[in-house]
Image (cartoon, rainbow, N blue to C red; front, top):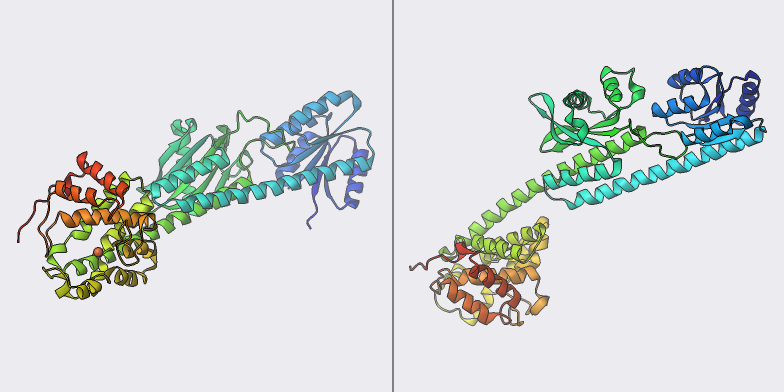
Length: 500
Ligand SMILES: [Fe+2]
């Protein structure tokens, strides 16, 4: 395991030497500085896990050293060493973010005990933060997998980002004419046009490198842009957010550090973003990009299925001139009725597809039976009644349509149990199949068929009412009557009977 690195800061060379030797023997790597100013110079160049510092020192004392560490967003724990006369200063150091203090003169074993305690606390905190990060990722995954359309997905993702990282401002940039421009801007900070311009440049750079970036004061030397951003009193992160609206954008989140409250966790950190935050933020944006890509593929697949459905339905309806367009009208009635009954978008999707496909099994029924103007013989009826099972067998080969199989298969059941193919009754019949039955019944009655002339809407409603509880679910019949009588379904009530 790599040894922990400790920076000892004290203006007593003898004390530094004794502690250095002792800590080296304990396996720690040790750096020394004789005052706060020297310590800060070392911190700019070297990685350090813990600072053990005296309070009273020339040039820069321990309290100011702690303040500097906090203002520079350094993730370093501090233990202060103090004499009895400066105990008030020690308390102030704790208030500023020091983890522990030790009274001088001290026994060396007391110092090592405090050091081990601080490292153990940080290890636990790191563990909590990693577990917390994992929980955030799992929770994001759960949320994103629930969304279907892209605007809801983006909205839900941004809400999750705000909940997790608690930014004071947020902006999503997308390419416009070879430049990054803001599409979504939240928070007062970006009302300042200059700040918005800086982040347009930052988004350009993140998009061109495809690398996430942390803008914190320690990067001041690295770029003028980062310096401007840091001096405006914020800590910021930017990461590529690809695939939304078929664009490769950049998400920026900003947190105000000027008015940062002390977090009181005793390790000298302020509320600026750090590298752990950047790692989690990158995972978030990458995950959201994948989700957007996945949803786009699903939509493409759905479109292909709709085309497939439509061509099949046309093939079926072409066999019977009287039923041409029947399935589309049934689908439209189903969507209207389903929405009124409070179905969610996924259910409406299934119901619409089932309505389009419900009679697809007729493709396996001989034309002379389908188009027979007279009543069917009982042998012909037996053949005709096979069409729901034929439909189920055809559609069973299309995995993405599995959810609609029960609706198609049971669309000729009757509420009183006298229907087919399984003789199910009441609520044993799938709910959406019962909606489909009402829509199918109404459409069939109000259009011309080989065996009947079209009825008017009022007459069809009376027949539905008379059959409520026998052929149809009474609550669904009632909902349809309510829609028609309210004038909410005019399109389906003005079809004038056609004579052939
Ligand atoms: Fe049918």
